[in-house]
Image 1 (spheres, rainbow, N blue to C red):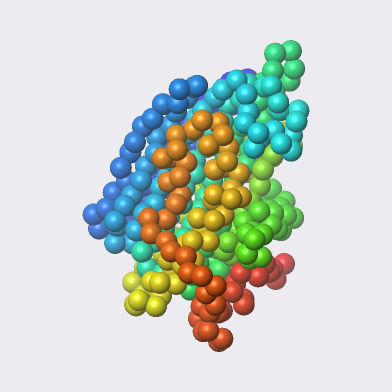
Image 2 (image 1 turned 180 degrees about the vertical axis):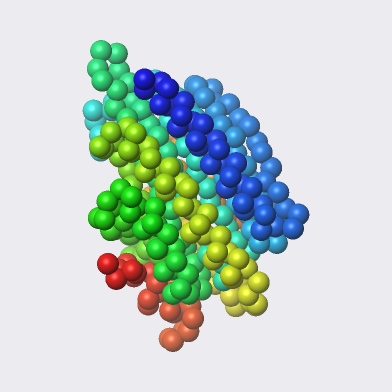
Length: 304
């Protein structure tokens, strides 16, 4: 039965990639995702879709991958030694969209499934994923909308689910060396295999299905906001934080590189342009300072 279940997960993920790409393309007048199908030497492959030089999205990627191998990499076994020396199968959809307008936040989403097998022993499987928002010039109403949709994705599975996975997101997307969150959070979950396969799969689907409802209204509301060189420079500076997190802390990036994944697809999450400035500090009371003083502080956005 598990093989049929895995097939259903793959079918869902491929469809999710299609739906997200179609919806994001609809915001552009002419830019389109370009698909790049690839194979992995050890087993599996995927299809990467990247959009560049759009009017709304400067660059973004929506990647599907389905890979398998004889041993899980250290990033997967470091905290779970019982997974060592097991064959594995991993599949998922991961996306990052970098808008052109600094008033439109960057967004990230990921849903994934893993199974680790060893002859003579029960398989170990789990789901993971979530979505998070990284604004440069945030609006409270946008952040509230983002978290309201995140809560809606969780409500059918329990009143406490949103609070738990929201907290996990705040803790995961945290740059320890900067002592700040990457953005305003959202949802993050991993190692989900309860209460059973059907319910865990249903929750992963709910998270994947709610991403567009959370993100597109913000894009549509802010994409035509006027901006100048100051806002653009701050956007590029803050994009540097995104790069720092992905290369230093992100478990998905580490897993992909350590498992021999396709580097171009793994690093498609990077922004097309970013810059670093030594010891930059925002002016007191400025819009840039508001990001640090208010929005990069984990908080109970919905007052729950």
